[in-house]
Length: 270
Image (cartoon, rainbow, N blue to C red):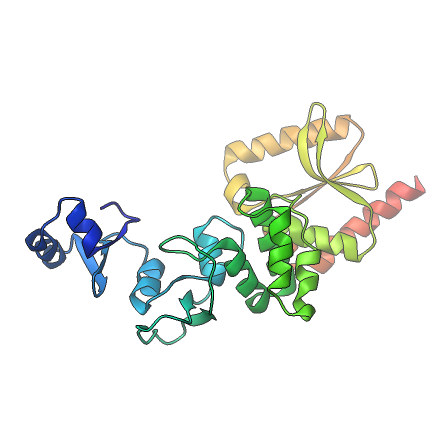
């Protein structure tokens, strides 16, 4: 078993294990018994182990994180439970449970993306929920047709979340800025390819390039050097460049939008 494996006793026996080898592996700590007849490798993610031990799978934001979707990842473990299940254990305090009477088939450890996104629309702030849907679209985990299924699964008051998703942005911070630009009525185009520069996150008012830096891709010296080179090339091409960090979008959005408005006014008055 590798670090991500969840297996039933029947599956282990079919793979060549014996009852004795399973018992010995549990005693040695090589594998962990999560519940009756279900085992995991010793390196299994604690959130996955918790969900399976309770009798479900990762749900909502926890499932989205496991699937590589951008989401508000900090916080409690979310577990999706099948309302038809008969053997559910008590979950640890703080665990968020999501009951589904007819869950879509997901993986052994995580809920189906549509179910996870539906729960996220209930749990997460508006902007974060839209960002998660955008991310799932961008990654190809859901399709445009799936948006209709997702919207139909939500109460009317939450369907506006799905309506604001379009999948063009490549990160959650980009989506949050996109929503702010739309709400402010500022014209922009996302993911624009500029000759000699590459693809930039946004072009606003035809002349302003906005790049949104994430922790994952812009923290190394090499990445910083590459960003400076791109900014220089964009300036040579006649663009004004505004580079925003993760913190600017997540915690200083009003100040960031004030900067955007000032640049738009400068461009329009020039």
